[in-house]
Length: 302
Image (cartoon, rainbow, N blue to C red; front, side):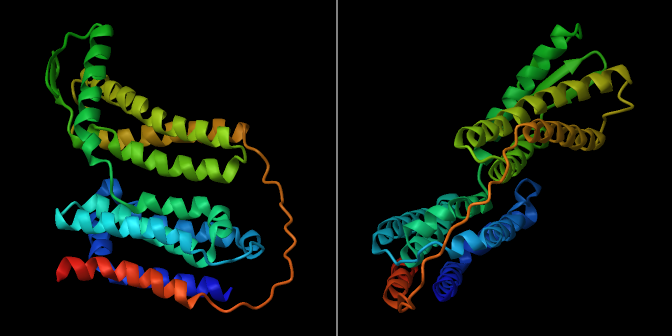
């Protein structure tokens, strides 16, 4: 347990050393509804670790210097990203430093046992805006094709299309990126908590990525049709965003309901902890981590 405390202290020090990068992430969580979920990632990750505390307490802890290699690699990525002002790679590198530090101080067996809660931290990085143009174009194409198949005359010009009852356009809020990211986070967590087999987890996460994309296309089509048949009395203005989230919530509830039908019981794993001999804390490994992490900002600012 003392090693856990040392690891937590080193992790806090890493965040403080790269405080500017961490604040950049938090500022995006504040101003962007798409990435507001970032506030929940760290608490959820900590809760998952606490949930597995008995299993993790039985895992032998042994500092391993081999994890310094990915740590140094993450530090180099952070330096390169900072020099050219690429924020997302620098933020991913910061999370990678934290994960590598866990491996250095607590060892590979602990890292493997806590892998999902640790990897879950990557969801804190605001990432995916590059998909916006692709998703907006795909939404416009599907909506236009579905309207034509429904017998509604439509003329599309880029992200705008015209039908007899009015003009519609696909904007960023209609791209479905928010739904995709929210579904990826929720689907990954659901799969980890309810499935034991790897293939079921992978399949459910895959569905969590595919379903919101298709659901967003259907949502856009239904909203345009609703506006068309009500002479734009419904689904106009901000209403279509509200309808969109209600539709998305129903789709996710349906996906989770199907997932629960195939949920696997959480088999209790009894791990007999071997008698522990108090070993000295890996101060040298912790110092090496902090030295490597601090070297990046020192090199950039000098």
